[in-house]
Length: 175
Image (cartoon, rainbow, N blue to C red; front, side, top):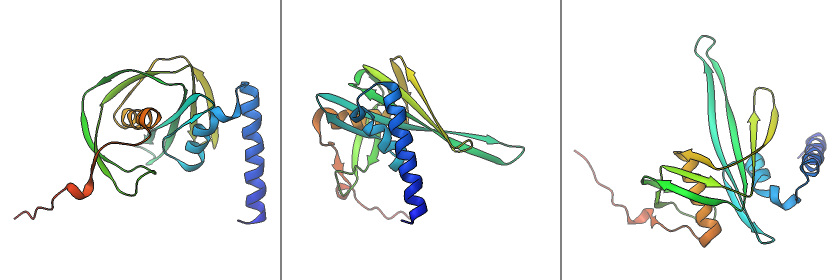
């Protein structure tokens, strides 16, 4: 990493810490959110008797006339998330950082979840800003957001993701 990049990263980290202090919450609560911002994806962990989870959704805005658009990333941070309901069943392949291979899993199509504290971070690539907002739950997610919630809740409650490994599949040559 070049010296200029290191300076920018340090400056960004200082600004992150200032935002965390302004929200008057313990720093460790923000780890999943910071991981989602920096590395992408959904994250969960247990820290100091708290369950912490971030779930990311994407929202693309596209102007058909100008043929240009952008994708917002909506990241939701939950402190001590509580799953209220699950609806539907979707069979899908997932890969988790804890496993080397993908697994066939069952996930709900829709979930409703609440938490002791919820923050929504909107990463806007057009303005290059990260907007933070405290939300009151419960919140509902469908599709990939619901899968992310279900996956991370499974980590928080059981550590390991249960599923059928990809090598139980069979290849079939079609004519």
